Length: 126
Image (cartoon, rainbow, N blue to C red; front, side, top):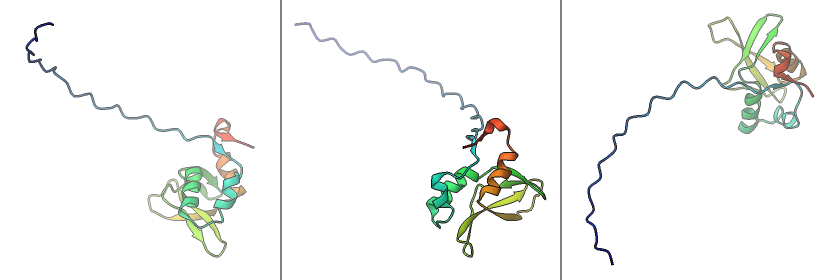
């Protein structure tokens, strides 16, 4: 049997604080699906937080051109139209500073306007 060695105190390693993380690059949106997806048909006519969240994920922050100019869709919320029983996106003119929004129904026409304002490589067609 070996004789027990006395434990010697270890020196603590000097630990430097890690450098601050570099600013993360802006996350690129996936290609815009310029067609009505299966889930979307139900979601546009269903008033629920889950449906609103799904529609915002697809349409929120997207830009499009209308006869009146360029618009950007709100990333915050949609508006439920009780008369029509469907969701509408809230779009703001790109150059305006005021918070004036216009409602656009989620339909084929809106998808076409968004698709036309994007480069072809960023649009996925059926």
